[in-house]
View 1 (cartoon, rainbow, N blue to C red):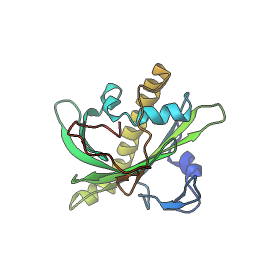
View 2 (cartoon, helix red, strand yellow; view 1 turned 90 degrees about the vertical axis):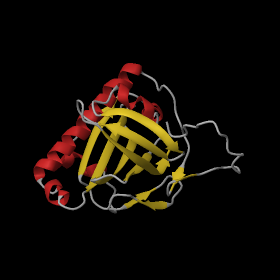
View 3 (cartoon, rainbow, N blue to C red; view 1 turned 120 degrees about the vertical axis):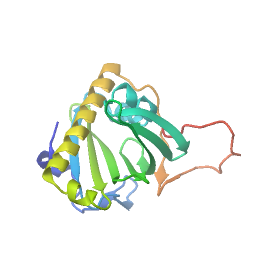
Length: 206
């Protein structure tokens, strides 16, 4: 596990920008980082990425996530909490590149947050997974979340969830499913015209 100082090397030279595999440079959702944590998992990038997109499985390994529901193709509703305390909020996937990158933002949450996760191959054939999160508190909460204690708590939670995912995917050895679509600016990219909409609930992002 790499902590904040160790993970600096993984950040591109141009803050706020990310060169894509097709040569196009796209804007990162995060102009600054609140926390950053990295973990290496002993499975290939494709396996790690595929399993990550299966959001409904997060409650199987997470100590925070209690449920995930699909709302729209790029929007999910998450229920998180400790003990009897629960908090429910919607999350929009704003950008997604198979085997490389996924960025999200919370909708109507106080404090709100943005996040991104990167997948990079390691020399050993595994995957380095880096999660960055930026809290965007409102009102009086701005003062509380500026404290170093709040940042350490958030980093500890992110680090713990990454370690939980590591144990989960290494225990499985292979992904339990995948969604390998591309998302740009909150919209799923289609290679062909969209077919007529079905009334059957879909789960395109996990």
